Image (tube, rainbow, N blue to C red; front, side, top):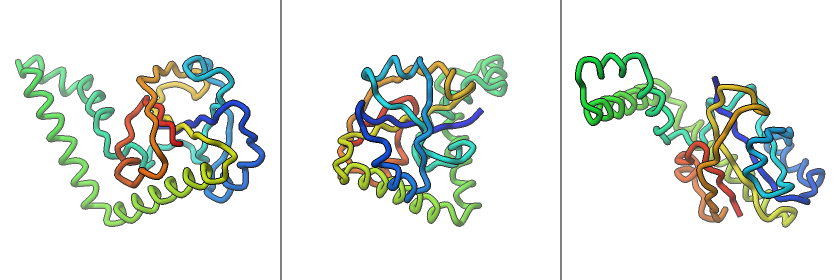
Length: 187
């Protein structure tokens, strides 16, 4: 279906004090009532969707991580045909990787505006996260990217791990290499 970015804030964060920052970056604080995800977060953690578009499929966050697309191709009809032809797992993985790298190169060559868009979006996220944390109104912001097959409130998601990241160490490359289903806590 679509990629969505969701976010977390610590229990007790005064949301109303952060609204001007969210507004400044054209973000929102739309609550997500996904009990499956909330059960994996610290008690009382605020869980919401920060972006305003229909979905986040064009996000720069995690855009260089090819593991999700790789997994989707492993389950494709084409790969099933290759298995029937006797292709080994290694040969299939090499074919998938080569295919994805060619597609990415083709897309980036075709879209001459991609580098500018990517850098603008990464800078926007960096500035947003830093401003949120620099206010002193919160000490941590979590970001979670997931490919949804169902609804935001009903999707079964397993958070693979939580990774803490000092906001001063983030740059475009860090954001573009975020992994799906990993909760990144920026502090």
